[in-house]
Image (cartoon, rainbow, N blue to C red):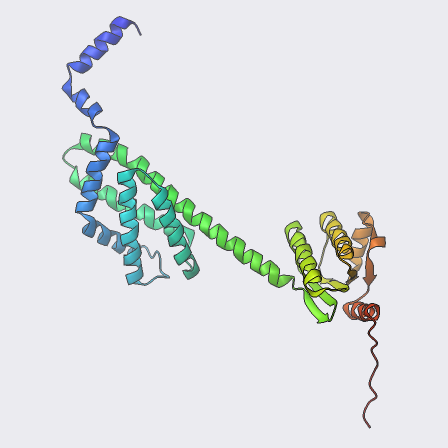
Length: 304
């Protein structure tokens, strides 16, 4: 474009005051006008939103009073985020909300759904307010929709992150319960393993066992893998490393319950079985462990 064309375009804009008016209305000014409208009609819009939540059967795990209380907090946080264009407080509230309602059984799609319902309720109120001024309505929506989408995304991400944290905690608790280190006698521990062993669980198993050895000053450990259906190279090597680490702490490890399939797999993948003391079943492993500890078990005579 030449300088002449550019100057003529600028001149045309100066001669058209409507263009200057549109440009002078920055998105922030439009958002302030929007926020004033939402605050002025807070009660009506909040109640309409609660009705929509109930009609669509969202947050069914919560009572009506709880839904109304949370809707009030969400509405105020929503309007504050529109006014300040800062989302840190909204993120904190989304995490706090998640902590309170996830244990109640509220799902992710419900939280996203109520935020989208609020966006719809507010958009309908804007259509009603500016229905006679479509140009102003379009400018308001252009300013509102990006902020509304960001708010919905912020709440959804905060909820999902909190839900994932809860799931990780639950998985950690399940793993700990599924790999208990049991003290049978003084200086004798048993670690029964049941189910699938993935690399993460194998590492956790090793950590729990080593802590148990140190805490109980164990001399012999029986690891029973009767309930393990399969074992790959990574897990097998981790088992060998567990045996070696236990030995460094002064404990002898006896592995029991090797199935023919797992034994064949260990031989095929080349695991050094010379470092592992294996016994056929758990009872035999406990008997050998007791002999190593100096216990002598005798059968009592049957009473006449």
